[in-house]
Length: 75
Image 1 (tube, rainbow, N blue to C red):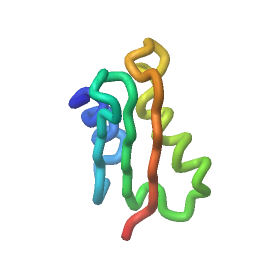
Image 2 (cartoon, helix red, strand yellow):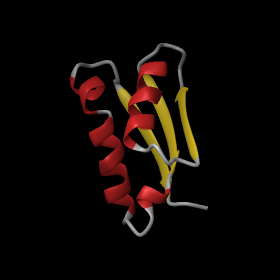
Image 3 (cartoon, helix red, strand yellow):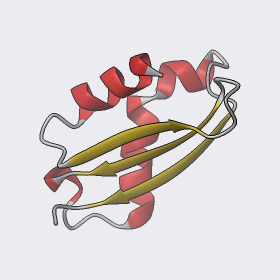
Image 4 (tube, rainbow, N blue to C red):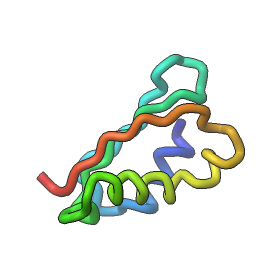
């Protein structure tokens, strides 16, 4: 889980909120929350695309089986 958070922190270094939650305790179903000025003005689908890009490797190798994403620009 910390590895996922590290990837997101690298992708969103200015994040005001960044959280990774293991939804089931099994280590492969996650919810991520990202609030960052880098997401300001972007459509929701584009915000989510940026999160998917940051997590591309663990998504591709099966580390992440299911991912729920909550994003927003700066507060």
